[in-house]
Amino acid sequence: VISGHKSHPKIFTEEDWTDLTGNIDAYQRSKTLAERAAWEFANKENLELSAVNPVAVMGPVLGKDFSHSNQIIRAMLTGKMPFLLKIGFDYVDVRDVADLHLLAMTRAEAVGQRFLATTGENLTYKEEAKILQKNLGSIANKVSTQEIPDFLVRILAIFVKSMRMPATFLGKNTACSNAKAKNLLDWQPRSAEEAIAATAKSMVDLGLVDK
Image 1 (cartoon, rainbow, N blue to C red):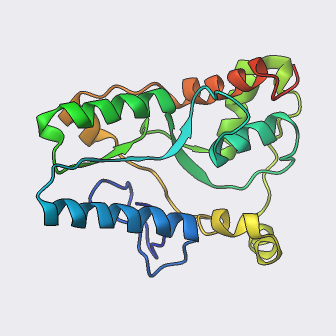
Image 2: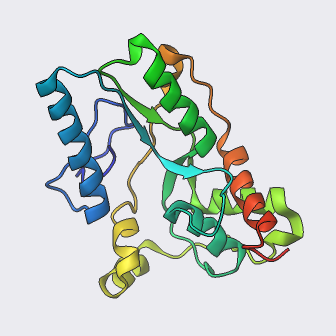
Image 3: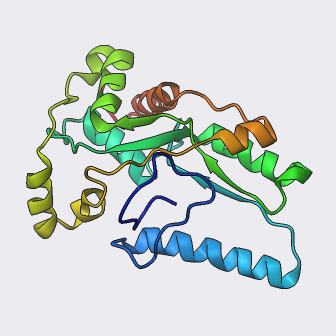
């Protein structure tokens, strides 16, 4: 939804699609192409389809294999992110993503609809770091709230592949609306703080982060 745009709206909705002609990486491109193909197939075969598009997914992890969004939490807690990019994203708890999938499958009004799975809160990495400090106490002693200037990020992105995609969001709004899922399906997600804290606490419980 949010990638590849030259100008960003005040808030993204289900009417928006990632611009495949824009500056996007393979991950973003593949997600968009896959959903486009799903809608084309459903229309051609006269099938019922609903799509759930989650933002950065947080919540309890089940083991050592977890998403890139969760990796950022671990990197913050272990002190491997001494400097933070000045970018923001929406978040959602994995348990609420599951709930929305069930609603999309079982509610007749969901047929033919796209839904954004987001708490409706857009948080910077610095705000995310402060949530960790607030909820984990001394366990978050290594969490940094020091931000790195945008110009330096753009320079580093030339040489560091992992920074190229995040660098495309510098200075751009990424806020997404959850109004459709809440109004049409009565979906009620947890807060972003609860989702982020749950991610961190589960990593501690699993021994993925030192206490």
